[in-house]
Image 1 (tube, protein in one colour):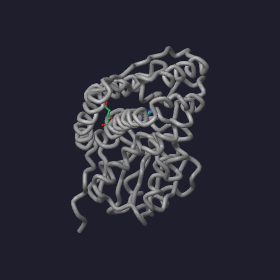
Image 2 (spheres, protein in one colour; image 1 turned 30 degrees about the vertical axis):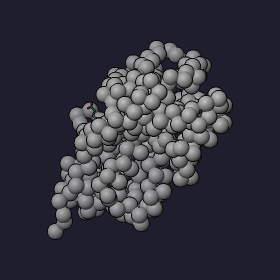
Image 3 (cartoon, rainbow, N blue to C red; image 1 turned 90 degrees about the vertical axis):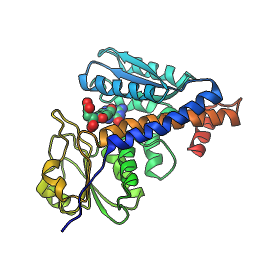
Image 4 (spheres, protein in one colour; image 1 turned 60 degrees about the horizontal axis):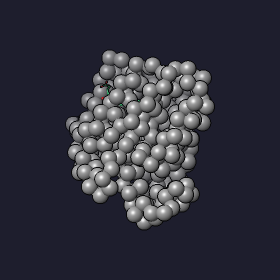
Length: 305
Ligand SMILES: Nc1nc2c(c(=O)[nH]1)N[C@@H](CN(C=O)c1ccc(C(=O)N[C@@H](CCC(=O)O)C(=O)O)cc1)CN2
């Protein structure tokens, strides 16, 4: 007989994280006299993105930070968005920058993500941040994957030596979560739209990560008993990428939708913004005259992460 499945409660853990961040933000303000700022950049009028950006701004304010909310019109060009990011990179009051994905199709999103200064990349979207994470070096991780790893660590779930199957290979979800699981000594398979015999591959998984962005694409009967099921999907009607209601009773552990991975995405972004503020505070204390030297600053940030 299998044990009672563990519900990986992202809503509860994100609240705990927020509580602990309030004290850290108070300390930063006490030491610097400055309230840390997360800049959120939204381009266009996608209703879901508007909701997510609002949730991020509100979370910032709940922990005592400020959010600088920048909303640019749909017709913004790549050049205009790059110029906006440059301004935020140069603004000493801003310690984190979030560019909401997706941006309108005519914009070169990769170029814009990579324009974010690595020490302000609290959402973990730059190639540099990804590369450092993949190599097991300190950096801010991509928010959703890092949130998933926080949940896994919090519930002390077994990862080393386990077979993790990640369904999806997006730059901010599938690829980074695969690297993070690998860094924790899982054996990782990344599946995608051209993968053959997907059900068979998923059936071999101890850990399944749904990161494909299609409602209930991963069927319950692909998932073996006692697996850890992480559902990073969020679709209308409160459903994810996995047929979770049909599999949860025989899982070792699972994330609900809503209330699992989603709140951890936001909590991770906010936590990394607080870490960025603390690093900037420390690097200024250590190198008061040299914080405008980009190379040195990045080295110091890496050392302190
Ligand atoms: N730059 C980024 N863009 C996007 C990211 C990201 O991490 N960085 N992730 C997604 C969307 N997203 C945040 O941006 C996000 C999606 C869902 C949730 C969430 O908490 N969902 C709730 C349910 C929704 C609700 O209550 O309305 C849940 O799962 O409990 C948070 C963040 C794409 N873009």
